Image: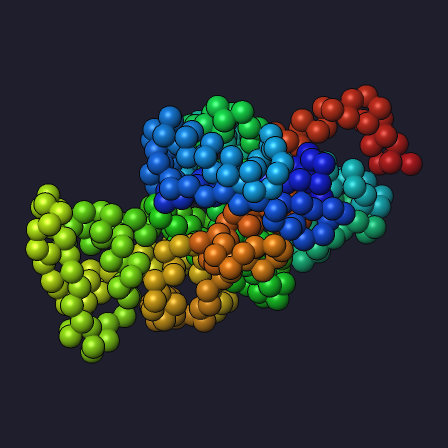
Length: 421
């Protein structure tokens, strides 16, 4: 369990998305699966494409969501784990090596290797201004060139190597989110990129082991994470989401955004069927009086607007995976999460475009969720709770260095004695 993320048995997760802001408050004791005791949800305002565009509106959305969760839980929180879907998160892999001098590998050696990886990435960040480290995750170890070692503790050798998956994001976007949360009198103790969190909530152990791609289809962005051998090894983001489908409907049918969202939810389908031609839908026109007669269109016209946008989104996902080189490593398994994947036919279309086996992912590693909040739209928020309990390997460099400084002289002497005696 990561120290500092769970306080008094309580953990709070905040999912700041382009369509909704959601807060879960859960109780977790002794590393068990978190049990949700408070839920708050608000329409997202002041947020576009996962990034904050109006600080005051975003602050109000966060405050209302957190207040509703606190009221339901009967608890007051002051710390939250936050998702990150904006700031264009980027993945890189760093390989570092430290000397062992022939002694047994211990915790101090692992810590030293990970810190060396942190410092390597920090140096790179100095050359690439404006990026901030979000995750630094050890994915594989080697001893004297022997690869494929999952846990090197207790082994002997001359050199210990570690491959680390580093995820960075635009520092300005991260700072905006931090400032918004701090203005709500909350402390953002950790960030997690959205598809990583969604995977922690929805994937079963065999999927994480054998290889799987998580596609989190949100309102403003579609994010990707590839898991292999129980680690996330690649993440990416596409700035297209469900809100773009709503906008396409509004533009194509000249109807207000509120009505286009309603039509998408009630009548939307991704794959056309012959009966669509015979089913008529009322479409209020933008700017018309409320009592004006609505235009009627066949449902096939609505499907003809929705399908190309989702096809384009999935084709972008496919091309990003192919360019990354992780497409084959991820195997033939895809898990869709996020509110935009709930349109009927999305799973079948994704299976056709990606040529993989696709399922819809729902939170399975969290207890106490009501039926209304146990769907794929809430996977990220539920995964943030799991991140606090289980993802002890993904420690940002800043947090790790801070913990090292807190250890003081006694802590450093202890590490030195364990390493040399």
